[in-house]
Length: 284
Length: 286
Image (cartoon, rainbow over all chains, first blue to last red; front, side, top):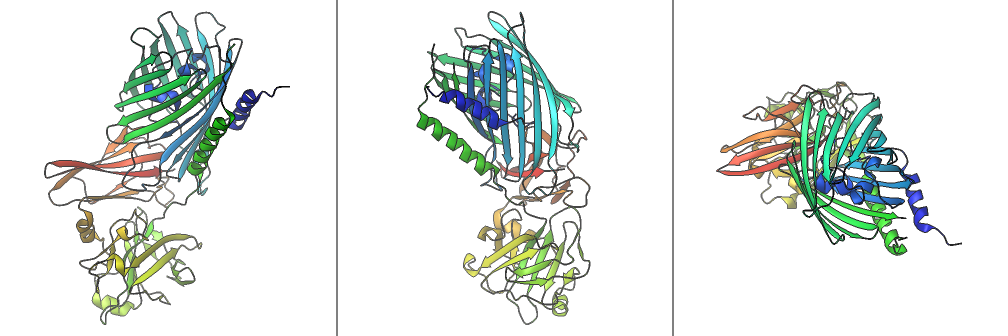
């Protein structure tokens, strides 16, 4: 019998990932979306299948896949120069007969003093006419490595939908609906509503607009614009701009069949550059 | 149907690399504490005994009853009775309190330990343990670090750099037991921003409830100091012109508690028409 190694590895990683998604107040999204601030969504492509986005964004022929991603946040600064703020994410998806499950785990480390862990399960389908819905549930855990204080945990829910049209898709998301709050104030993520318009690939590439509103005591709004251009379906350049805080990003992707590697960079005018790397593999 | 093929070795390498990064990122490291060795006078004179100064960098007073200092193999009790080092204040430990007080009568927060661990005139390392026996501070010096060290005290120029490193110390132009080492900090590197403790925990438990933000500026410079959250948004601007020290209670400009996690203190300094930034990282935990 031929061993089914790739599938086995995918299942193993999904099991290890467990049930706990990227840091809850991250300045840039983890994974392939870093270069576009999440404003580019292609159902048949890397952005749709990456496990750090809702399952409803995916509608391709790959049946499973895994992604590893990491970000090193901001410039080195004048203190604790050897200690970084990094996040490593691991996840995968499995898609069968129009139903997609994405599972991801992320570990965020700040200065080797503070950590956050996030796990998200997202279930979505393309079986419903006109709209692809998904639901997400995320668990968070935050603490200090010293263990002097108990870690804080919380559970959030989310719902997303993608309405695909011929030339563009509309995305809607509600994030951070609290199911279980942390014991202490200061560990919640603000309730967030997102709406976006994402074009399909055209002569000028793909374009996306993402509007985001956060209820963090007062409503805050963010607008992200992104452009991505693929060359012979083998390499892509992406660039994006976002407000509140004002940031720019760009990324380079190289893809070969089911494998893709993406390097992304995002600049904050005061805090400096964040650097990200994503490796994605999908199989049928 | 297409099937992706990935060489096993490459896949194994990628997984191993990610695993190594993850392990490195997750490896625990102890944070510093609020009590720091801030000034040392090891070269005793006939009119002045050896002394060392401890600084409380937190916003609350700290009781140092049953704390110890000394070497790893020879520690001495600082005091067996309650002694509170005031918030952002100092205490001086000396071999001979009578002689010390005659030399520095204005310094009132002084302790003479029952047994004095002699300080080496040339190179030494000192440790401080809290009442639970937890090592919370270490500092060292070596005469080779300084060009013109005769009988002066050594002043700490940065409380965020390890006290074991040469860059943490300068030869003080004037000893300042019980007082901030502001002269030394000014001379050391021009504009300087120090924050601490890391992590700071504004949960009203009486320990590390405030973040001390200390700014030293040359006379010709001006600065705007701001605190940013990890999400890149500004929490608040500190009052301008910035005072020498600001204590932050973890409340953002909108009156809401700042979330737990990383934050950044940024001083944008203008000096003689030139602008530059000093940026510091910190951790907030509730």
